[in-house]
Length: 79
Image 1 (tube, rainbow, N blue to C red):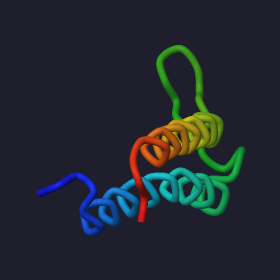
Image 2: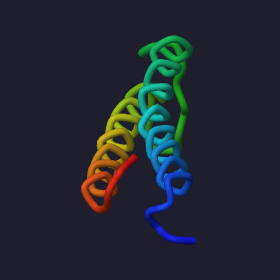
Image 3: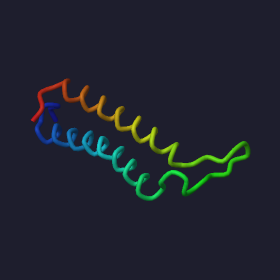
Image 4: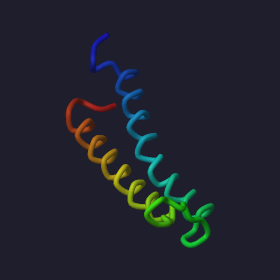
């Protein structure tokens, strides 16, 4: 199939869009279900609050997916 096929472009668009939405969904779930100070992972060295690990990771993942979406969007003719 040709890469300019509308079905392939729509599939690519939904793939990138779903990845971009995943980061804020993880952030929202983290804020709702694991607010800061409610849980702690006791490691050998120290205790770690999962909130402070998940928030930066979800923001980093969202920014990475947005950058990938924009690079993909600017590449070819879009629907």
